[in-house]
Length: 349
Ligand code: KG4
Ligand code: ZN
Image 1 (tube, rainbow, N blue to C red):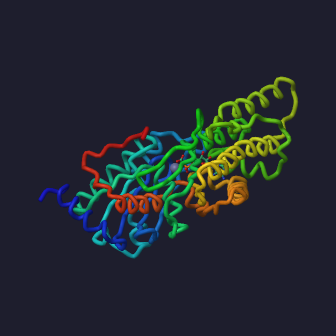
Image 2: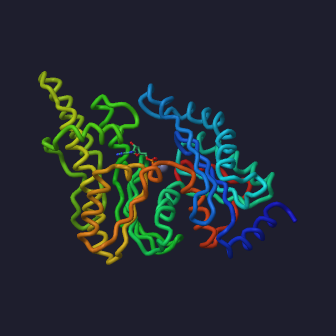
Image 3: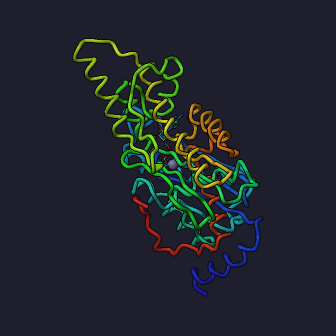
């Protein structure tokens, strides 16, 4: 039997079980990550972050990211296997992020995972990075099942989703321009804070008060969408006008004002989604989900709207491979087929 037909058969058998072992890879941006998962359990999760490398450039340099993924991926794989107490012989499925993300960065994970799956003769499962972020909630809340509302707030995406099944989701709200994480990163740059901007704005905001009047990133009327470019431009204009007049800007106050509006609209619209759908569970996903103001506000507003709000730990909000392994398990449960060996990275997935 050829490799692919063999994998189709193997995956059909695994589908009925939840005790098989997944080796998962994530390399879509600036973290090289490998994890071993079994069902919704994480046996190991290793992350090699490139933040320090990209800091001096004020953002991720794609070419440098790809090269560092190549340097790290073998060593991180060995570490993940050792930490889980298994060897390659114990791996039943290889999972990998194939998009969205940086093309060169994705290709490192995809190529590595393909070769490994083929040489081990096990099925390869291709995972959408965004669905991976959402699956982080299954790790911290193993009893979670659809339907639920998911607020997905990352560096590249901002969505409110109604999840009715692994393969049945409806977009209730989405950004019309910048992603919320992107806005955090751009505003941080204007305020002279280092990359990545999100956590730096959060730190700075703690020292200040939200005294600057800024436009809300789309107050919900009929829709539950967002727009971050107006808010971002308002901050940029405020800073440059003050500079032109020789006035001082209080960076801490401005960070607090920006954060209040940036997360405020996410909280309001998610609570509104609960009221409109009657769905009583809210989950949070994506890097901006590590923001304390967002987490606290979401719990308050979600509970006031009658929902329970599940928050994955901050480490599971930012990029990791454990969420990719568990997402692969959910996809397999929902009937996913193995990926073919001509699987390509899809930066705009
Ligand atoms: O989900 P993620 O790790 O990567 C993408 O898939 O995009 O998200 C990264 C984004 C960055 O924009 C980063 O600044 C933001 O998440 N972020 C935060 C915080 N931690 C990370 N934004 C606000 N507050 C935080 N604590
Ligand atoms: Zn991500």
